[in-house]
Amino acid sequence: MRYLLVCMLLLVACNKKPTDYREFLNGTELMYPGKVSNTQALPGDGRLQLTWQPSPDQSIVQYKVYWNNGADSVIFNTDNHNTSDTIRCTIPGLSEYVYTFLVYSCDAQGNRSVATEINNARVYGAVYKATLHNRLPGTVPYTINDDNAVVLRFVTPDTINIATTLKYTNQSDAITTRSLLPADDSVKLTDYKFGTPIVYQSSYIPLRGALDTFYAARYDTFPSILRLVQCDKSLFQEHDLWGDMGIYQSDTRVSKLWDGSVGPQDYPNIFHSDGNGSLPRVLSFDMGKVYNNLSVIEETGRGCCNNPDQFEVWGIDDLTNAVPEINSNDAGWKAAMQSKGWTLLKEVVRSDNGNAAFKANLMDNPPPVRYIRIRVLHNANGNNNYVNMSEITFWNKE
Image 1 (cartoon, rainbow, N blue to C red):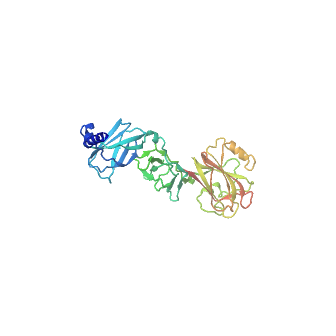
Image 2: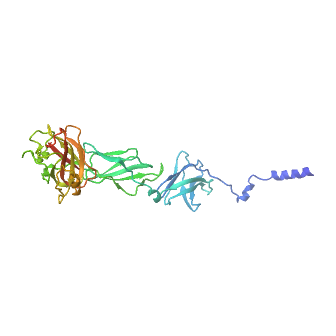
Image 3: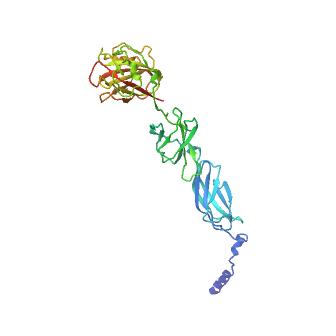
């Protein structure tokens, strides 16, 4: 009896058809089109681009992409089934956020594949832009070559910098644009018009392959480019002040110091003081105009002797109540000068015999200067009375 029951059950089972499951699917088959592969998300500015390689399934006619938990979607029609190609789907109008996308392959009957999930797809916007800053100028922002070409220097960028765009005025008064690549730390301008501003703006991408380039919020102004310009000696005038040393004779006047001579001169083509005093001794003159960035002095001694090797350079822009009536060899002279508004621009010390032209940088960020006083402290040959010099030249930064 038990044997008969088992046989009947087997007979019933063998009579079931392979397609009987269709009664649960309304007479249709459940079809799953092929999935996409090698997905990637490329970030952008308020947008992104999804890429994938298409499925070889010839039934696929479109792809559906969902995000925001299915609340948003886009349909991408296609007839491309070449797995060596890349499908690109750009989605605009997105907020700055990190998204998850689901990609489905769909056939003409509405069947869709198992979802392919793309996670950590980032969109950039205002928050990211606010973190971007222009590349910084170098510690020494620029140098000026002998041919007046200007070399601008920048520090190494610290993020994915694409370029730094510079705008400046050239010598023809035209606005010129140059680009500095991230691997370069300097750019050379051969046609820069001195005295005009240079502005620059850096650009970045958040990741390699990003859709969009992002820019710092505004152009910054590069530090002012100042070159040394020789002060106009045609404006220089003698201007003796209280306590100034006298001259040896009428043709060895203070004005010999700006007659344009080059190199050590011989008597009488020099300034030659009288001997009626002992060092320190002082001479004064008017440069004829105010200089706001007096920067360098060059002093040339006499061909033979009595050449200063230690002297002070003082400057002021207005002589009103500015001259102390105190001898220059008085211990209180320096304090008296400062109390009257004079600035000690430089104490020059030479280690040679004082003959040749000798340049020295004056103080940084000097006040405006028009009037000069030179106080000679010591002569190279040890003479304590006479002072001889051939030429004095000044340069202003502008």
